[in-house]
Length: 338
Image (cartoon, rainbow, N blue to C red; front, side):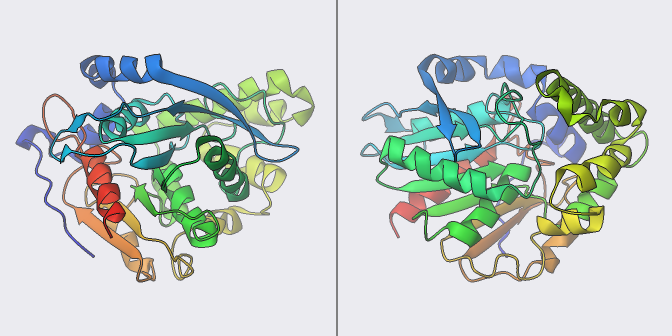
């Protein structure tokens, strides 16, 4: 395990503040020019993962032959990065847009992939999203590679997206010919994380419960025969939703089995054969750093633990710029020279 220097200003050394500011209106305002550039240069693609599954994503191609801040002038193109967002985020989440901006500036093409039922995709697939659906993301990456024909392919994700990225790299990294993978604040022990989210009067519980409930309710407008509306109406918290969601809409029969299915503990990543980086912070309010000790770390996996950053924040200054994005750029550029 490595500890990487990251020292935000004193007023940004609070994990809750970092977590909340990362997706805030204030940050959106401060980075809006970068976001607008990404939107203006993206192309939207419908990805047929198999005969029954379709996902949507956005592709941005890197500008050619521009100097890269902190890295000098680099030859273009550096390859493709497939980015995965977190639970109840989307390909338009602020952190996805600013990460895309940083990667484009470094010469990478970027494909931001929406997970099932996230963003404007509730109508595409009848089956509900759940965290075991790695195969459709793996299939999507294959389609994206055929579309883009990259010289190198990288996979990165935030929060649950990072958990997906690391599992996919372990299961199919060689098959996909991934150059490297990075997970940022990836859930390690999902049962513990859900227990934290379920604490009463928690701002995180309020956020995720309201978002998930609204998403599930909206899904019924497209697929009323899913027929869980009455159950959903009775739900007062995340635990209530999980009681009908897990046995009814996942391959698992109970919460213990479901959360174990996407845990990164023990030897889950033992088959990892491609370089991978897991970046997390000691003050992440929903992913306890103590969970790192439960991972049986294979040789290709590098774990970096920093003191500050909250959950997917890593905001390094009062312009609310993300140090994690620059760490992603430097890590992927470094892998190209290996």
